[in-house]
Length: 505
Image (cartoon, rainbow, N blue to C red; front, side):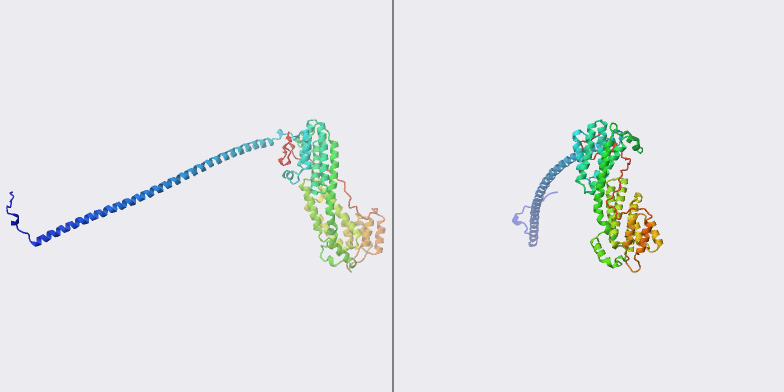
């Protein structure tokens, strides 16, 4: 295809029309505006990118700072945890050491306990050095505390420990050591009794231990009469070389002294309760309004002075005495003798006051006495002491109470009085009849002719001329032998007694 070339001059060319030029200009302007808008947009976009870049840069910087802070905090925590871990390791090590020590101690104690349960390992003796004898007497006798746990568990433990020391001296065939120990024991007990001669607790405790030591000397003497109830092992533990019968007698005399001192201390605290409790306290309803006119003021004065003591006071004192003796392991045979002595004291003091006071000689007072006697009898049953013959000591008082209540007018009455009042002397019977005082109009006074009738009947009966009973009279005390069931080879010396210088053999 051929191209045509115009050879005409430019000015010869055809001039464009006005409409066409305007259109071209408009297109040019539009294109320019579009380009400007484009570059503006590009510029805005660049600004946005710059802004976003700054934001990202700031965020990155903040994150870096935060991370550095966290890392620093974690380092501190790591250091703290390392310290804690070190401490825990130390504590764990200490605990392990403690556990190991405990295990070793348990193992040792187990071996010791196993050994102690085998009687054949021990002979029931305690070894001590001669120079330790004063320490032995001081710790087990002179300075012994009665409130200790060991003493409460086995009240007669001192007696057993002393006897085990005696056995070892005999085992060594050391006469000088044995004699010295026996004299030191007796001297120590005497000294502690003198130091506490008004202390009921100490007297009870050492009466019990002295009696137990006396029993041990008998049981292990080898004498046939004391071996009947012993076990085969106990028979093997008998003394081998020395006869301690002379020392047994000295110890028995010492026990008697302690017993009488013990009774005296009880008597001193017990006596003030007897007359108020048995005679003056009026527990029977209505008795206070039925007193003889001539004696009402006197009786009231006695009652006011002793109104704090009743039959309950008497029973409470008896209970305290009984509990103290049981707590210290006193032999039941000795306890029965003590109770019998105390009941005699009640009877003697009460009866003597009746003989001296007409205001105590009435039918109602006889009823009161009989009632109180029944309380005493009930107390004996409660303590299982019915067989101590204590009620026998109250027979004169019981017969007095009966005499105050019975009819006293006919010949038959006189004969019955003679028959029933066998425990009262003729002088006492006549005294009560002459002192009898009715408390109301329904009772009659005892006539002089009735008294003479009773006196004539009493002439045919032998009896004491004694009016008053001896309140200080003491029944003869005996120390019953009782075989101990305690195996000496099983006894251990408690640490609380501070006798670490003794060695079990």
